[in-house]
Length: 57
Image (tube, rainbow, N blue to C red; front, side):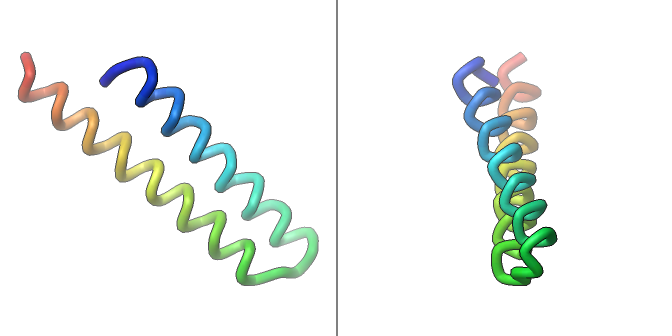
């Protein structure tokens, strides 16, 4: 996995955590769910990149 991909996935994960936290504080369930979804997408991308790396070597 390239450094760009790692940074992008980390950024997406942090944005998701921020959205989730903001949703909890403001009692906004939609924003909280969006944050959780963003984190899941970042985790899935990271897992996909790791699988690609396994097959490269």
